[in-house]
Length: 124
Image (cartoon, rainbow, N blue to C red; front, side, top):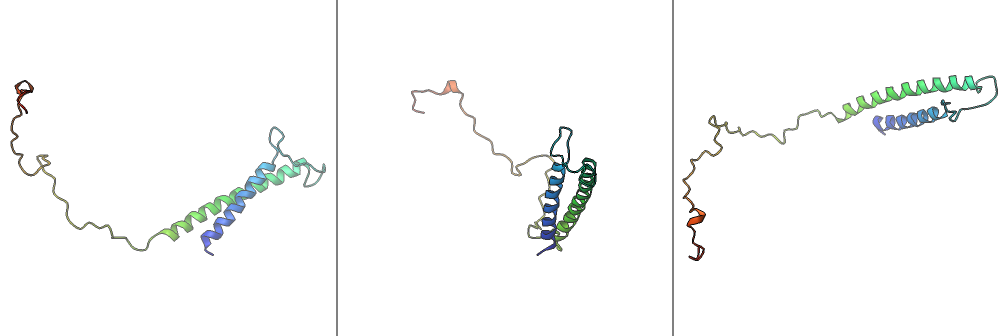
């Protein structure tokens, strides 16, 4: 199992835990606030402090894992050599300083008769 795959699994678990901890926190509208005995860890204030600390720690771990995954993916996907399979070693043609696109002179074109000169009954 590669390091990248392992870190991705840990990142997913930390992300899911972070979502769960955020959803358990008491919002301004009441939310899913955790109740319990009036004293100790599960009191309203104790639960809020615990969930706030847990959110901060999980967020920090999430950011650190994101940076680690970025570093591992760059290391894993960087090539050791330069790929020269598309090398075009033929020199390109020099551009024409006069701006002509056709290097051969154009042949004169025979003039076309005007539409008034064409006789529709002559079989043309």
